[in-house]
Image (cartoon, rainbow, N blue to C red):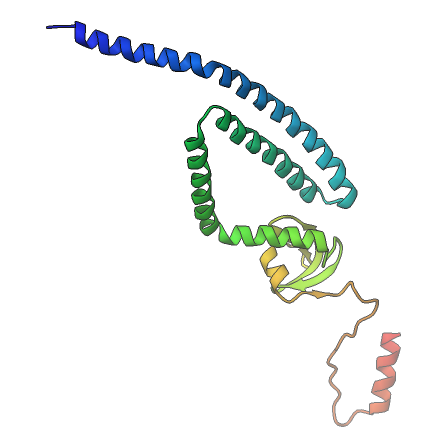
Amino acid sequence: MNLKEPYNIITEKLSGWYEQLITLLPNAAVAVVVMIGFYFAARVVKKIAKNLIYKFSDDYYIQKFTVNIAYIAVIVAGLLVTLNILNLDKTVTSFLAGAGIVGLALGFAFQETAINFISGIVMIIRKPIKIDDHIEVAGEQGIVQEVSLRTTKIQTFDGQLAMVPNKEVFQGVVKNYSHTASRRVDVSVGVSYDDDLDKGEEVLKGTLS
């Protein structure tokens, strides 16, 4: 068995890989420096975003969401630039295409969650309802305890905690009893035909007083 030919093939392969590695080393060093730079830039952006969003919103969920989005955006940008420096353009293209496909698939799979999430963001920014408001929505009535990114928590008057999806609150009919200083309450009172109506009216007024 002649081992010289396989040996030559392996040697040529290793030699080619070695030359590619040597050629790639300068770009790799630059890529590492760039990625480190983007990492520190992401931390700076995160700090700036935190200071800015704290001035415009006092909601914990909006603050955390905005800060994390800013941080991740800078890191992803650094990753794409790094891959480009390494001449991995096809990898960048495949990455973007894959991200688009995955995003589309996740959008269909978690459509309801996404709607609730977006509704929660809009509600937190516009504040149609606030903590301690007395509201009625989706068949639930009580006091608003929390408006998160996915659900609105309502403490009902029978002591239960109802978590209503933000989609129902954002798109549905909401009765907010806390927006007005007074309201009308209808109470049905039965009076027989033989009773004195004037006397009944007097009794009702005395009871209300």
